[in-house]
Structures are given as structure tokens and as C-alpha cells.
Length: 424
Image (cartoon, rainbow, N blue to C red):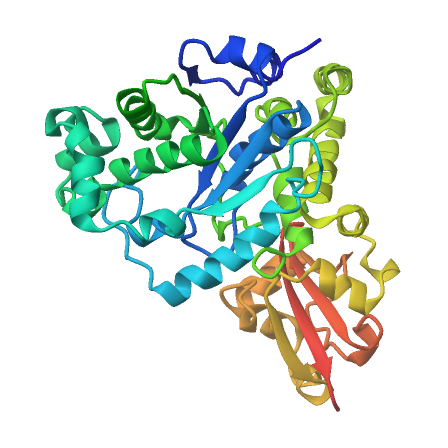
């Protein structure tokens, strides 16, 4: 029977691991944890890899622990950061933790009787730790030389701003987390991204020194796109798991637009599809990449995981309508939901009729000027409700609006702006 380690390896999710991890996951019931940084009230797609690792762990019969870093979140992890982060207030931190807890519950089962997930807040122990006690019970077991060898510290020391003592202490706080979870829940494995290796091994060392026991670490690769960009970063910013920050349709589109060079790896990373299903999609992608079947399945699967099957179906239907240029087949309310992240302008019917189409294109920013808009119309590059515009003198009216409410102006197939028609 396939073990969790075999499954992670097949999916390309083992970047490094301490000796003995593979055997432990094959022969023991392992309790493992991953920490989540509460710097925002929502997780983003960059967190999905490790979040799904916890979910996979639970599906293989092991016990997952998610740490919402209420304590370490007040300090800030320097790993992978080139400069000091702004410290959160207690109020901001509480709001962020509340949002993250809801999202964790979509992936982890906290009710199952055999191996339920746990959600803990490291503020419960770090908040009660006094400075002298921390220095005596944790700090004395780490030399400065040891800390300076860690990549997260080294990189910051080489930067212009350096590293504050506050962030310098972060590694010790995370090591303390591992020790606390070892004592409280028998946690013997910490997982995370490869940038967490130094933090994880510090915790392993602390457990060895104070408890004379062996603990493990396993890290996954930091995902970048085929073009070398950090995964999850777009021109519009981060892609969030919170529907209020990134609407489900925009979330779906993010995955649908995955580069052909990345899509097969992402199917392994970010879905729970079985091996034979993924292999079949890989064959289909190689034989007919232009059909983009792998990208459609990827977008559907991840959107279903994060937002539910109903939202995934709506997003898929909306994408099909947009791709087919069939906006008129959708009701205004549905179209507005699909285009929730598209810029919009509210105008009255009277205002709408005061200017010709080129003027509106320039006003909403789809053209730099009316003259450029005119050239775009003549070149066939402008669309009104997915229909190619041909009359440069056309004046829009409520009759052009879908359900009398919205007009979708488009420059090419990607750039769009919604005119919301209100009143007379």
C-alpha cells in the first residue's frame, strides 16, 4: 500500500527530509504540524501546497496540527524576506486568525474520531513565557554561531537593513513551538516550505537536547512558474482563498490561465486526483495541448476545494460564456458576479447617450484617447457585450445593456470594463 511519503514523492513534494521520515510515515501513527503566518485575514494560493500536505497527511491516517501563529505572528518570520516586516497589533492579529481558522476547516477534518485535526494558537504558550524564562529554558541551548549559519539569518545580515534582534529570535520561538507540541500532543514531525528548513531543524535539535528524543522534518519545494515568477503573484497582487478578496470567478481564471509548462506539475501539487486520472490528463495534454483539458480540470478541482462545487460550476459556466463570446446568454446578475473583479463605472442612461463609443472607451481607460479608440474600432479590436463593434460613431443606450443594466466594453478578449446603467 502506498505510504504518505511515497505519495508526496510521486507528486514532487519532497524537497528535503531528515533521516527516518520515510520509515516513520510507513510504520507509525505520526502527529505532524505546519504553522500558518497570520499576516492577513486570509490565506492565499501560496499557502495551498502546505495546507494540502496537512490534508494528505490526515487522509493517510496520521494526525495533523495546524498552528495559527498568534505568538510568532507578533514577531514576524524573516525566512525568505529581504527586509523587516511591520509588526501587527493584537487587534489585527485576532481578526486575521479568525479568517484563517475558517479556511483551514475546509481542508482538515476536526470532527473525525480516529485522527482529528487540531488547531492551536502558539500565543497560548509563547504569550505566557517571560523573557528570563525563555532565555534560560530555550536560548541557552543555541549558540550565536549556530543561528548565524541559518540561511534566513545569513541572507538578512547581508542585506542593507540587516536583521533586528526581534526577528533574530524568531527561530528560537519556532523551535519552542515544536517542543511544546512534542510535549503536549506527541508531535514528532514538522513540515513546511523549503525556506523553513533552518527553523525546523532548530526545533529538532531542541527536542533532542531537552528530551533526548528524535523528531523529524520534511520540507516541500517553493513553487515558481515556468517564467521564473513566484507562484501566486499576479499583476493584480496575491490570489486569496477568501472570496471577498479574490472572487471565485477570478480564482478559477487564475488556475485556468496556468502556463502549459506548469499545468501538469500543478495537477500533482494542488489536487487530490488519483494517479491514474492525472496520468490520463498528462497523456491528453501531450497529445492535444491546444484543448487545455488539463488546465480546465485543474481550475475546476482547486476552485471546488476552496469555494465549493456550486461556485466552481458557476465559474466554469462563466468562463465558457466569456470564451465563446456569448455574454448575451447570461443574466445581468450572473454576469456581474462573474465579472466581479472587472473595473466598472456607473452611468445614467442620459449620460450614456451624450458621448459616442470612442469617448466612453477613452473615459474608462480602454483607450488612451478617442482617436486611439476610433482606430481600435476600425481595426476590429473593440467589443460591446462580446460583439465586435464596427460603428465608430455609435452612441450607446439602455437598449444595448444586458437586462437594461450593464454593458460590457472589451478591448481584445482580455481587457474589459463594465458600464452599469442606472436611472434615466
